[in-house]
Length: 103
Image (cartoon, rainbow, N blue to C red; front, side):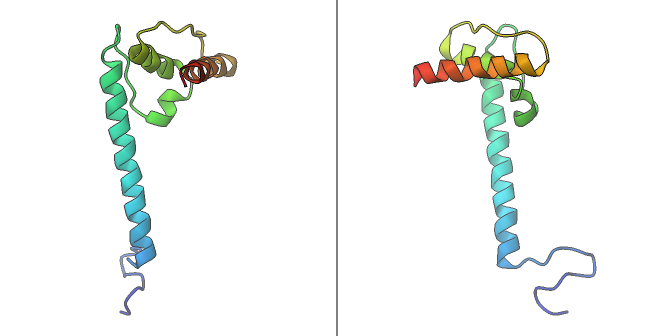
């Protein structure tokens, strides 16, 4: 079998581009896991505690993002209750406005 060709098992040949891509994906997964663990360490300080299992899914409605900002700032954040798009956008806007004010 020639070097760089696909194996009989259907695996991807490990040329330099594929190795680079695999390392990049692994690096991103490590960063995501590390940041998720850090966020959960912060959210554990809340009463009641909050938790993030999937960084992208759990932060998209703005609620846990506001939880995190409350823990980090010591301030209470006004939030919209509910699961609708309007409430999600309002919560994210609240978080972004708070961060803008704090620079």
